[in-house]
Image 1 (cartoon, rainbow, N blue to C red):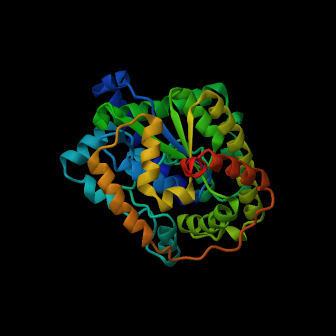
Image 2 (image 1 turned 90 degrees about the vertical axis):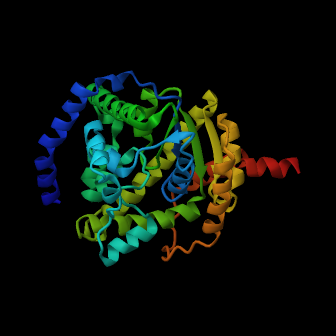
Image 3 (image 1 turned 180 degrees about the horizontal axis):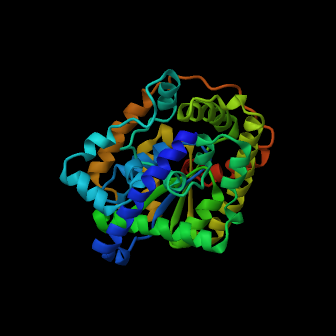
Length: 350
């Protein structure tokens, strides 16, 4: 963990230099308009990554940022690696180490530097203020500090929101071409509230899954995706397990409240995990209809092929028994949200 901090400090002057090069040579990016974004939101292990990456494959409608973009959010860097033909090589680099636990993490969440990811990567790696930071430094005190977005000063909030907006504008300027920005967040609701302040015309796509299914997968992922980052089994750290699970209970409560606010604003569309994974094409068609986005025949055909891959998918790992105490309210919320999904509406019509 200490070596990681040292490495980050050594990188910092280069990152600052790249940022100012952008401000000098490509400052016109600030005038780039980002059309009403689409934000995918849920709790972990509820299908957000699959949903995000599925929609991101429609490059005529959406632009996204990959892990490498979030890690190195500089137009000058993007131009350099594209000019040198290095992008594909860099994007093939695996995020996880080639170890037994690293390979398990890859099965749970496949991830290389070319993977489409949400803005949580940016908050973790460039702002050090995200739940993911807790995986890099798995100490309960760190989680408490990183998860309390409301504890930030107004200046700090303005800095986080303003910097994120600039990064998205850079991506839109460089290759967005008027398309909708698509991103996700399934860890911290308070941070999504901050992002919503920067993009108040955003539309939320919420995918829900029963806690009896997602909690056990979340516990498994927390173990497998924390250890590879530093070689320490987090379960050996006093208070880690309870802090991790209590944080998820708190986030479920905040998630419910935020979705209720979005419902009043008419800015939310619900789908279910089971619905999306079993009917990718039909669910995507409903999403596009709700968002007012036309779907091309090419993307529709792509979804049919994707469904065949999804039907034959084998996880390659087994989740532990789930712990559902404290998630009862979220289970009720999922049931109500499921009743608003197209799956339930079609059943009622029949």
